[in-house]
Length: 396
Length: 167
Image (tube, rainbow over all chains, first blue to last red; front, side):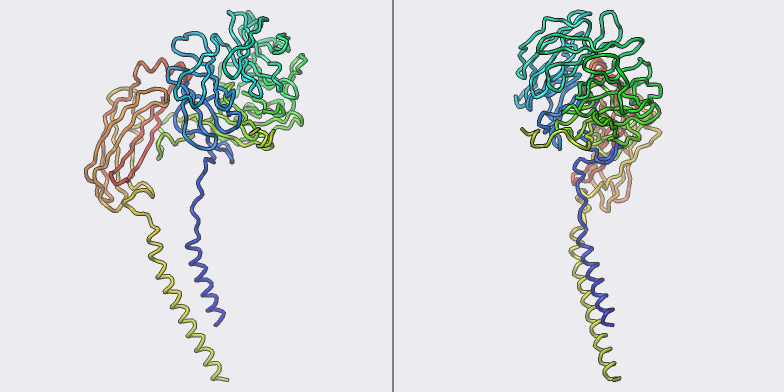
């Protein structure tokens, strides 16, 4: 009897305690699973055609384009800050210091050519400073060493120039590149660049060429034969050069159906030679866009394990040739533009642009448009195992 | 021996009754604090007390032209009558660089608890011509139209629906 009374008391008290100890739901803190797998975090929301994500060198902010204009925001949370007016149409934006963005784009007066503009945060206006005109491509150099821009010299020639972070051109190379440079990226030490070139008389971007920024010299690495074309920006890694190439096809690239996509990931030595299929990805792998990690040891790849598989983000460890999926995509379209994939400065995550498959029927949501994610292209941060640099090194 | 058993049983019974009484008192005392945590229905901040319903067939029949119509059912899900329910329809483009948003407003004067009212909007869903050129240069695909419908009262009760229309 005594035991039963004690038990009654214990149960009664425990019940009371349970009533008051229910903790409120923890805020989502931006972590969402929009269909890309656990750990994914939305970096933007709402309508707008977004692209070209770029982390600031200290990793504190992320800039991107929305319907042609440029914005940035704190990488954790916070309001958008607009950098350009609606008259300017930006294709690419990159940080060259913690408070300075460069943008490749055009104003309404620039009908056929593009220019590089520069803007600094905190200047209180949306005015842009023109750095160079007639630009074919641009790429920031490592460690805040400025920017390399490619200038179009007619239909069959390109020229390179170096600018400092303040926008001043300090070296204009007199040794032209034969053909049109369509994309370029620097070597890990920033002393050379690898360029995807459309040779004179060729309708396709079929040549890889290295340009030595110290000597002003250049050499051909490889030239694709047949109907092959280089897609996007070749990447210079610790293990050589990687690029995506394949036969042009009329159907949409890898982010859609992609069943007949023929683009593959290739590797070639910095000394040149015939490219070979990249080791570690498998012979059926279909690649779309690639980006080398900040330390040059890993390669983020948007692609499919085979033509019928869903598009995902993979990270290829270039030393061990180990390929790991960092998303588990089921129903999202991952954007595959050449600038739609970016590493965080420490190599802990990548930013991509994705949306749910658009419906052909009206979709009704019980939320304001500004908070919707899957209905529009939005930025997502994908965590990646392992990292290049410690946080303390980034802050330095 | 029998007396001892009776004494123990009686003591235990008395203890049980007393304990039970304390438990009942404790639970009674907890009720007001539970009540104080309950959301105030009039504040509307705990969740939408206004339910918005749209007709799927009507949405599917909308075209990117002037003179479009939409009926919206606004239901008061709360337990108090609502007054001056403002219903706004915002028509905008998925392309945020375009400044072609249009807004329409209707007011429901009285909406008793549990009752619904139908609100009709006539609106323009066409795209202004001057915006088309810029849209094509910055965005390589047709932009979708967005209808954002909000119902709010001066007391803060609200409901929202967003419709994304295919191009």
